[in-house]
Image (cartoon, rainbow, N blue to C red; front, side):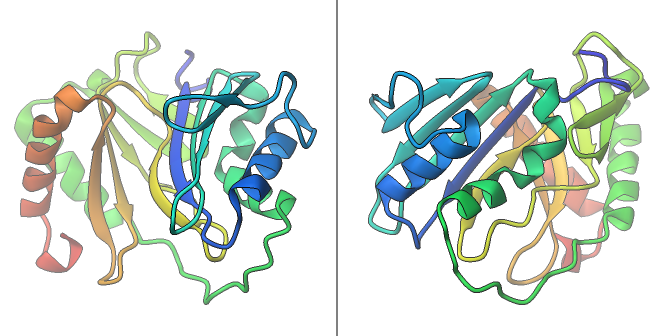
Length: 220
């Protein structure tokens, strides 16, 4: 991937749609990804739920007591990059979800957290070409162009989910390392580190702990 000029290689998200049925979510996902109510070849019954693969996307829809769940992965579809943050909104609209919108929330200001993150990188002796930043949706700004960036600071963070939806996880871009961002919580903005691979979780926890140590408690 070409980093400064290129497109982030992978999006992962996990969301719950409490106000939709499983059938409604299946149709909506198919409409957005394939243009039709039923995908070519239909949905496939898999171990985790109903599965769909189409044009770089893979989707899994699972029925649950608190609403159907959607797990979506996207890879290497440049034309879709500007729209990745709007995918859930597109799917909710395609399902005809009319859940009233709540009060709009402003995004957390990442400036202080970003400076603390840079301090951690400096203290750990992380090379400049092992770091990258996300300042525009779908674009990873880095000194490298060979896909080996490890530490990413995301100034944008996850999208606001559609009214009534729950966003359980979101990772974009996935660099194979550590994705750092500032996210909403009921108590205010919180630091978040997500590892792209389970083997990196202990290192992610250490990074989060070090990052928190550079900030006031209100940001932890």
